Length: 87
Image (tube, rainbow, N blue to C red; front, side, top):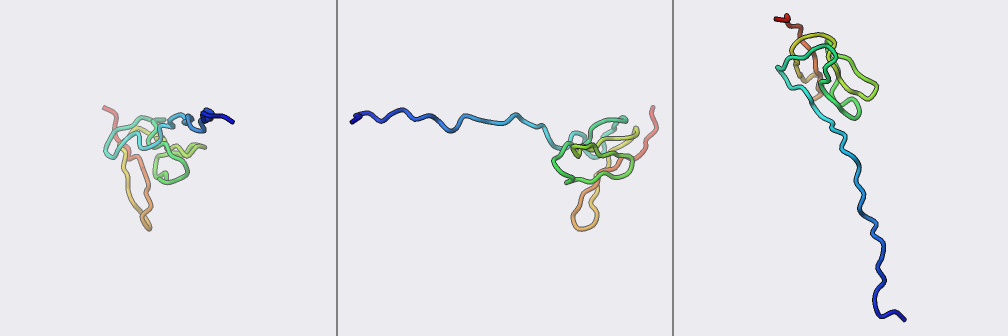
């Protein structure tokens, strides 16, 4: 009979890599075409005017302009890009 408890193997010690999700460009900031505005899982924020939706639900700018976040409907969010002249 053992007088010392045997050392068990740990079932912890794992962690996934960070995914770096979230809003990358905020309201009122200027974006170029192709700039990533939001990285998200699922369509939590909807694409509005002059924005596109990637196959991983990334929202990106299609034109040069200013980012505008807005709410619509029952608490839903949408992000658009308002055109701005390049100086």
